[in-house]
Image (cartoon, rainbow, N blue to C red):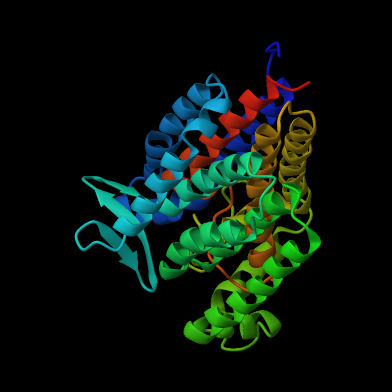
Length: 359
C-alpha cells in the first residue's frame, strides 16, 4: 500500500491538547511551585525538560517508524515493561509514597513504569490477537492480563489497573472473541474487584465516600469535597486563568489527579467543554483511522491507543466530579508527570503513523 500524508487534523488536535495542558499545569502549579522552590515556573520547566522535550522527540520518531515494526518487537517491549514494573520493588531502586510503590529512581531522574506499561501492553495485545485468531485465546488473554494487572495491583494503583482491564477487554472483544469468552472475562473482572476490596479495605472506604461524600469531610472525603467546590466555583465562564482559589493549599494533588478541578474553576463549564470536545475529536479521528486501517494489527493498535486516551480522560473527570469512586489516575496531556506525557506522545506518534497507511 502506498504511504500517504498523515492526518493533519489529528496532529493539530494533539498539539492543541498539549499546549492547553501546559497552560493549565502552569496555572495549577504556581502556588506549590513558589512554596517549595521559590520559583513559580519550576514545575512547568520540569515538565518541559523531562516530559515535553523527550516526548516530542519520541512523537516525531514514532510517526516516522512504520507501525509494523512495533509488532515485531512487541514481546520484547512488553517483557521490558514487566521488568521495569518488578524493579520498582527492589530496595534502592524503587520509591513509594504512602501505600503507593510506583516509581523508579535512576540517578537524578524518576520514572513511573506503569505509564510505559500501558503502551507496551496495548502493542503486545494488538500483536498477539492479530496473529492468533484461529485458536482459543481466553486462557492466554487472562494470563497476559494477570501478569500486567498483578504487578499494577501490587503497586496499589487501582486506577491504572481498571484502565488496562477496560482497554484489554475492548481489544479482546474486537479481536473476535466469542460470546462465552468475553462473558467469562467480565465474570473474572467482577471476582477480581471483590478480591481487591477484600485485601485492600481502604478501597471500600473510597466506595462509601463515593456514595456519601459527606462522610468524614476532613478525612477521606476531603479531596472530593474540595474538588467539587472548585468545579462549582468556576460557573459557566470560570474565574480566569491563574485565579483559582483551591490551589492555595485547599485541594490535594492540584498538579496531578485533581487538576481538572482547577481547569474547571479557572475556565468554567464552557472552557471545560472545549477541552472535552478536543478529546472527543481525537477519539473520533482515532476510531476513524482504526476503521480505515489496512490490517488487523493496525486496527487493534489504533483502537487500543485511542481507547486509552479517551477512557483515562473520562475516568479522571468522572472521579474528580464525584461520578466515580476516588482513584488516582492522571489527566492525559495535563497532569504533571514526565513518564505519562512521554508515553502519551509516543503513542500518538504511532497513531499518526498508522494514519499514513489507511485505505
